Image 1 (cartoon, rainbow, N blue to C red):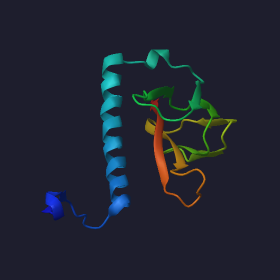
Image 2 (cartoon, rainbow, N blue to C red):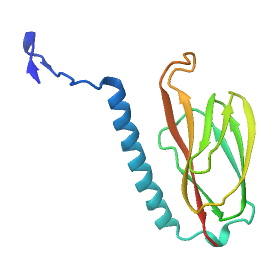
Image 3 (cartoon, rainbow, N blue to C red):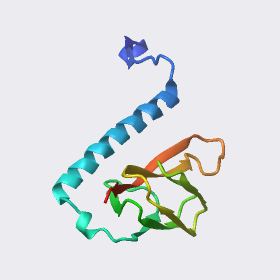
Length: 152
């Protein structure tokens, strides 16, 4: 920091710019969501007895809101999981770890169905352009839910 003309304090950035701030924001968001997930999981307790053998989940994608809750979608390993997705936003939905994805257009409904072969915790993200009118704008990753697959 340095004192500029008129006694104002100014800061200087050392490279990186908007890209590095997005990476820091994304990392901080991921860490926060991980703590939130495990905190919710501890407060809710085990839910394996409530898991349907062939679970179907509805995801409605709208504009992000403050305090938006992270949904945990439980499934048993080797179960067929169905995600019914209604989107008010354009982008791509992606189930990490399962290579399941679909292109979304605003106002569309899609269905993703797959067998949950691997156990673990798998984020479900919406990848969308920061400026929907500009296909060259940076891609934002918004975590919509977490698929938690438990071994039988």
